[in-house]
Length: 415
Image (cartoon, rainbow, N blue to C red; front, top):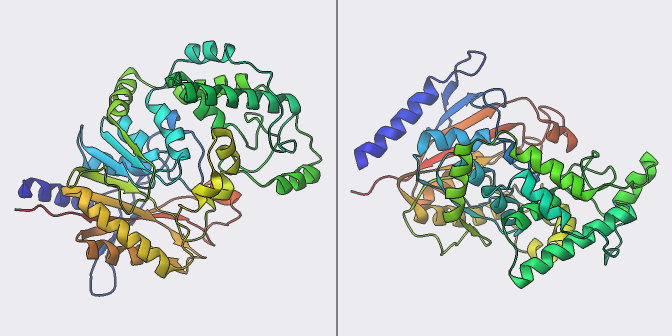
């Protein structure tokens, strides 16, 4: 077993050494400074031009990575049936990509919205099933129990409230099924956005929701008044978009993975439901210091899903200093070492934060080593700034995360 797994590591390093991006450029390899001599690989290892990701991933969530990132590692470091894990699952990018590729899935996130957004996509219904179910859902609800007039036309708001009541009732009486959960997931994703494809008037990108006062300012600045949006029509339209191009083999893989998937809502520092030495690969991206305000961004989604956003906010790590962040992530790495199978890997994605003055990968390496892993290298995937980064108000090569920086760890076999 030891020899087989070690060959996989060498092959992975050789693949990086000889890797050429779409333009033919070879990856740059250099030894990092300091006593550890960790190899650093720099290049364009994945890009949207290399392979169009599945449309099933098109669920917005703040600070999520592209599906090509977990696919890069899943394809190279796992085989069909292996367990792939993400302790900070977010919208479920790693989990969905693992399912599409025929791997087993474990996902965790402190925010219960993560499971609401991820789990239904393992059982995608047909557009006809969604249309039939929507026809059975009343539209004539009351106004919301909080002021949402700055976001929605009164008739749109009534439809949202009616849909919310229907989904809540189905959950409470135990009749909710895969189609209900799918509709709830899509509706949660369509609550706010910057196009006519969303329920709301023009607002910030769909991966966050501004406060009521902020939306009122946006409305005044744009001289806009919420217009009616047909929520049922938009849910069906988004459904068709999400399932477009799904092959029968991918549906089979997703259903098989989903039937055995485990979703946890808890602290990544201790997940007792995961057995020791069982996970072949972890691909994850942890909370980055105090950059992303998950609680504030998701307040409207929490309202729709009946989640106490304030209570959830207290469970999500928002470290203000690198030292605080290291304490939390050190405990996460100890738990990852416990659950990782001998011969397994962790791909830990971090970024340049605070105007590139902090490179978290340099802090991550010692944490993984202290937990018992060896470090196989740091992969830096350079790519053109995404429009999401521009929406955040950061310019290319100025601030924010303008590269993917992944530290790859390995758990040695035990003889």
